[in-house]
Length: 405
Image (tube, rainbow, N blue to C red):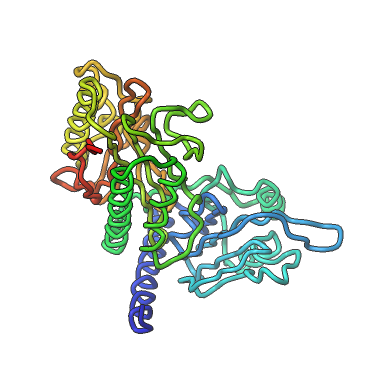
């Protein structure tokens, strides 16, 4: 990538972050927050990333003195209605790429001191610089560090600290910038599916080696290095459970052979955006009941695509799947249809539970599966919710299910 291209991309991202911050402040005003404190960890960092493009890329322990240690894993963003937003980074962490926010507090991983970054000392300073603070919204509240929260409550007894979903709600609707990146992520999934199908057509391979080749394909397409498991690992099922789970981490000891039905579920990222898609292939002709189950899963898939439009309840998609599965004398596996897609990969709405109505420009992972004779069959696609129904971003062939080897 040339310097000019990199600069243009940085400019587009900076404009996108600015738009998100403006939208965040507007919703803060509407909900009566003077400040918004957004927390993110090494594993669940989507809201911090949404506002800054920073993600905590490591976790562990760091020494603050010869007798005192601290756990390293997170960061926070303080959004003010009057002042510039601030990114506070745990002692021991450090932004290692261009972060699209100017005010960074902490972030020197090689000389961490007590009080650096995301600390009560810095939060006191930032809140103290505000004219009047009565109400502070807290995002990712149920994972916010308890010691820091207790110190905040003790330091500001007159301030109301409340759980917020401002950023969580804004993240549901994807911008044009987001959609462009998610289309690239879907193309990475398609390339990996093509690689997997090609390998399976050539004969025996272990589950682990197969998934490693898929992830190598996706990593080669991604211009950013990132830990592959910050959202979800890639999973597989080829006719046996692993740790009691049908869809499981790839097992180096499980060799995929002729006659197996393989269902693989790929998860990685493209420039921080989610890759989440699955496909099914049979190594040889399918038995009649297996083929019937697969055809029913395709019927469910198509019906849910058509229903994935604004106003449809997320839970209605599950009801559609269950009804069609039972009509075909099967059950929808785990009564699960999928989930929202975003920076934490598995996001709202959870289609197994939520009655949230869909909105235009949401992105969903739609993944109906049927368990038949110890094999999982079905496909998962990354789907854009539009006024005309769901449009699949992932395109890899769902018809050629039999690999005649």
